[in-house]
Image (cartoon, rainbow, N blue to C red; front, side, top):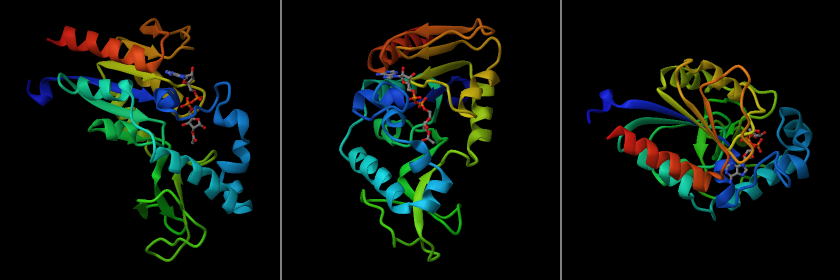
Length: 235
Ligand code: OAD
């Protein structure tokens, strides 16, 4: 099928899609923000106060990311590309969508395997090793910091994300508590007629939206199921 006649699927993913790859979520029982104070780790003020603590927190997560693999949900989304134009918008800082082969992945909250200059936010470098240390410098000579959008910081990729959702024929929302804005507000940009599938064991309906379908399953089960249905109806 010519790419421009394909229907468009937008995916908004959150920590839940990577849970079955052994990456912690944030707000579930035992989630990262249940066991750690985000104010000490994920804000510009925390970086000013104690950069070593912030570096250590992200180093632990980056080390783990080098050791885990995509799961059935990530691979199923790649299969959707056989018959749809698929754009993934992820709140996750892992690279599991990319490693499963998805070709269009927009990171709203940054990327764990990248760092950026504290002197120039546009100067971003790839990290090939898990450890980012105090004293590691960007090409401009400034200290490198994790390439993560911290609480209180702008979300530069929200504008392209809004455009993707506006154009979508179908929206899949996977493994997110929808508690963090502006990401959670993306659902409001879908057209009234765009079916929205929420795949999350804790998914709940939205009072004023009757185009929402709840699939209360783990991503590793619910995503392959909906993907197989979508591939079947596209033929
Ligand atoms: P949360 O931890 O808030 O929500 C995770 C969601 O995943 C919950 O709704 C769970 O029910 C669901 N879940 C758990 N296990 C699952 C599974 N196996 N399959 C499917 N769903 C499952 O994570 P996010 O909504 O992604 O930002 O959090 C949004 C942002 O808050 C994150 O990007 C992060 C955090 O602060 C930054 O760090 C900047």
